[in-house]
Image (cartoon, rainbow, N blue to C red; front, side):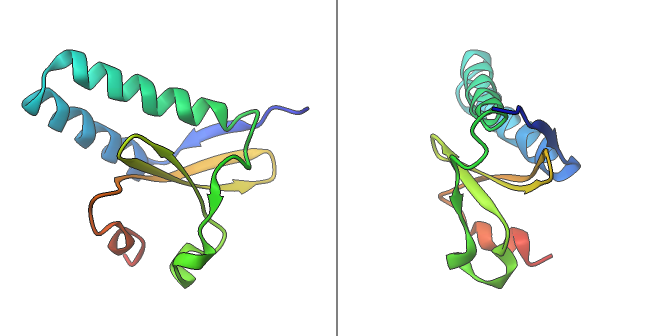
Length: 103
């Protein structure tokens, strides 16, 4: 099976940085490192299993073509374009995340 390339787009990196900052402030560096590793490890799995995430078309027109993979409380939204997996957003699933896609 061919391996895909994984690319986190700038908004996803910023969102991951925010998640890390929150964990650093609220729980500490060990928690921040654990959640970072967990999210990045989950995303790495997409390189060999790109369809493991659920299609998001049911969430509305802003989500057409997106898939999401769940990692703890976080949702990672991505699209597969050829042999590249583009990660667009990493959001807390407990928030009103659909607004992220409206802008």
